[in-house]
Image (cartoon, rainbow, N blue to C red; front, side, top):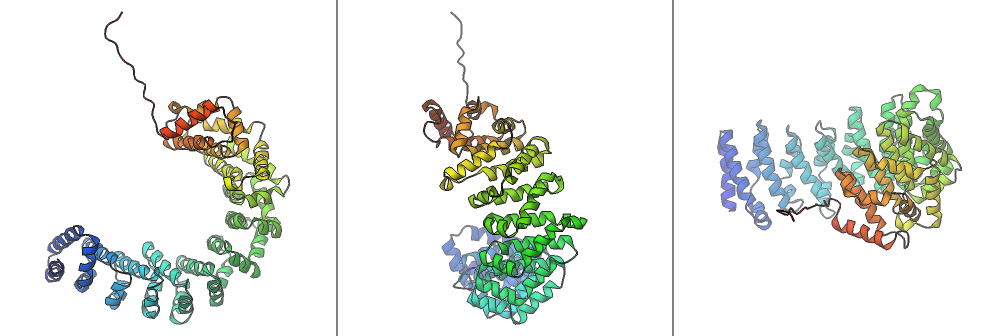
Length: 504
């Protein structure tokens, strides 16, 4: 079989007609498809890929794609690094091939090597190849650039890799990429921040390189869009404890809080507020006490935005509040603020009832996060808190949510049902569902539900109710819940009528 394949590969080089070449490739593809992995591996080890590599300079895209598919199959069976050991110079050439699919093929093979801790050392000595990979971060093809970025991130996770990335030719390569344009520079910053958050050594090396300071400087620029992009990348660094500590040491957080405080002085600053909200919201989700105690201005600004009802930035503010509330620590930190959360919940009620549909759904989604408590975290204190928040929304919060669950539109109906699912996980919520007139019948009535997503959301609610605390529902209702679950979310009741011929 190997001899047959090698003969066909050589034959491709001899042919001049692309149609004939494609026919031979089709034969090879069919033959490879008929082999098992072990047979393909044995053949791949004995084949000379050289003649196929030489064909990748063709201008016929379909032909090049066919060759790449075959090479990908053959590469994928071999051990990581085996192709590189045999064809290192060819792989380097593939990285500068004019066709993106060829560059991707080479980068994917390199990624397989660097993702394997036992094999990565193969590449670390090949500085020229690593520089060629780093240059692909600036590639016009997004798939190619993403793969190159992944390779650099993997290299930055190990001590030897860090030393190589931030010295000599690779350091200069990164510097050149930063100078090209904003799109490419932010790709480099993404790599740097990923390395910085991966380990303490990674953070120290990234700081010493000067690239982190360069990113911080963007926050002082006049370009709001660049500042927002910088905030998005820095969020990832702030989610690690050491990263957050470093940002505080460098006074980055203090400067960001100052921007929030001075937003009213500069009309353009309002464009930055959503980005700042997202940044602090993501950070406060993991470090609520630190953010709330050290930067109260951020929390005040969040509630001010929600209270203002400015629809341009209200959605982001609601998302931020949802992020902060997602964990119990965040809920307790918000509770400690006094009446602020109660006022915000009344505003969320107004959003859910009166604002445009997209904001109503966003309000419901974040209300679900605010009220949600995982089973393992449930105790009297947290359940008492979520119940008090729900009760404070309006005179009849249960009636409001049930009315939304009866809406004829799938998206908002589903969002309402997801809030009910959160209530169904908590004792007080189960009691509310049990006592609300007609709600159990509504949940169990399959005939009124035509939307797939809503059927599944109802199923989740009933599933949670089957685990309800004892005596919340009577035994007959619990049995109906269990039958509903056993039948599945998409069960259809079929009514059959038997026609009797003749009459009495």
